Image (cartoon, rainbow, N blue to C red; front, side):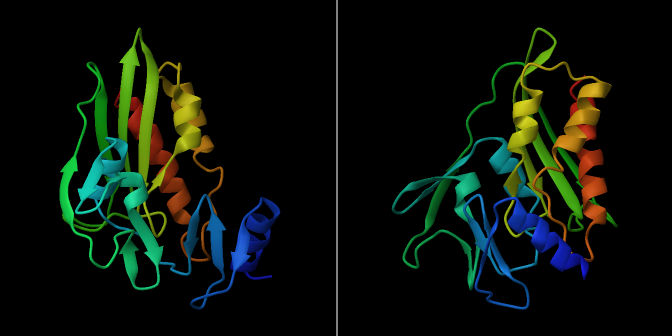
Amino acid sequence: MPAFAEDLAQAVSEGVKPLPSWGPRTVLERDGVVTGCVAVNASDLVPALIALGASIQTSKRSIAAEEFFAALPMCTSVLDPDELVARITIPSPQPGSRLGFHKFRIKNAIDFPIVSVASVFALGNGTIKTARIALGAVAPVPRRARQVEEFLAGKEPKEQTAEVAGYTVARGVYPLEQNAYKFHILRALIRQAIFAVE
């Protein structure tokens, strides 16, 4: 069985719903994301906006940054055809927070990321009180690493915590045939983000 078929079977067994395909791959619906696209969102800015809890004000409404981007046919955002972005608001991080951006790339900083991780850690009494982590270049839309965020709450930013967080990020990851290597890079960047807090 080809690798994609195995991945699809695994995804379906875990509750992912196959939908009619818009392209060469089966479209999957998981966590409200429906896509036929196999390209990734390679923005450096977008994961940072999501980790920072930014909101995007348009001519019609306010949208959380993590809900703004889409991977639909002929559409990369949830904007209506007659809707414009007016401003982006970024709330101030809590005092004592640590902000980070880690990017694995082939060339210089201007190059597209292979994988990126943006993080905001609110610290207190030597522990991570809360975490917001956004993953870039791993899916058609940037994704929050909610399982990692939940795991990190109340933990000390030490090596064992970083190691477990690296494995926790793997839950719900379904790489395609040619990009399973990204999983190992993602684990390493999650660990780097936590080590940077110390």
